[in-house]
Length: 244
Ligand SMILES: Nc1nc2c(ncn2[C@@H]2O[C@H](COP(=O)(O)OP(=O)(O)OP(=O)(O)O)[C@@H](O)[C@H]2O)c(=O)[nH]1
Ligand SMILES: [Zn+2]
Image 1: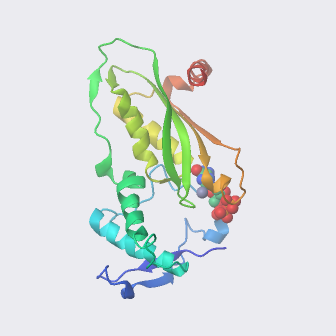
Image 2 (image 1 turned 90 degrees about the vertical axis):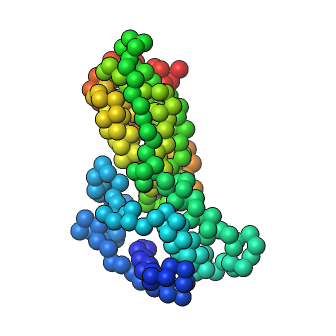
Image 3 (image 1 turned 180 degrees about the horizontal axis):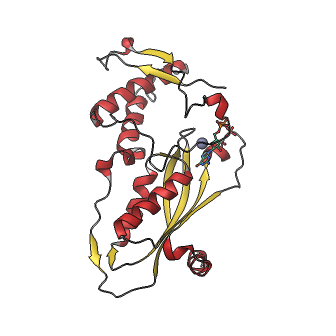
C-alpha cells in the first residue's frame, strides 16, 4: 500500500533545498487509506477544498507545483538537465493551474446570461455528445468521455454553448464521475431555475483501462434526472434523442 506524502515548503518557495518531505498520516473521514481500499467515501457534492485554497495566487501555485514536480521527477531518477525534461516541471505547473484543474477556482466559472424563452419552445432541449477531458482524483490520470445534458425551460433559456462550458468547468477538476454528474446537474438547476434537468455521462477512466485492472473495453455511465426527467416516459424520449 502506498503512503500519502505531504511536502511542507519553507517560505522561500524557490529555494529547493528548503523542501521538507514527510508522511502526513491523514485520516479520511476517520479511515486510513489502508482501511478504505477499494471502497468509496464521498465526502459531499462539493469538491473537497481547503478553506484557504485561494489565499495564494495562481502565480505562486505554479511556482510551488513546479518545484514539487521537479522533486517527483528527481526522486524517479530523471535527469533534469536533459533538454527535453528541464522545462517539464514548469509545463506541468502551468497545465495544472491554467488548464486541467482550472475548474477548481470559482473565478473561472463561466458567466451565464439568461434570456426569456421568446421562442416559446416548451419541450426538452438536449445538448448531446459534449466531449470532455477530466482527471480521476484517485490516480490523477484522464477520464475521457461524453456528456449529454438536457433541460425543459421554466421561462428562461441559455445559449447552447453555455451548456458545454458548464460541463467543461466541472470537468477541469480532479473528479469522480458521480460527483461530476451531480455538480453539472445541480448547477444547471440553479442557473435555469428549474428541476427539469438531466445529465448523462459516458466515460472511460484511464485508471481502469491503462493500469490496474487494465480493462480497455469497459466504460462508466452515470445519470442525473431531476423533475420531469424522473419519469420513464421522459427518460425514454431523452435516450431516443441521444442514441439517434
Ligand atoms: N466510484 C468511482 N470510482 C472511481 C472513479 N475513478 C476511479 N475510481 C476507482 O477508485 C478506486 C481506487 O481504489 P484503490 O483500491 O484505493 O486504488 P487502486 O489500488 O489503485 O485500485 P485498482 O484501480 O483496482 O488497482 C479504483 O477502484 C478505481 O477504479 C470514479 O469516477 N468513481
Ligand atoms: Zn483513477
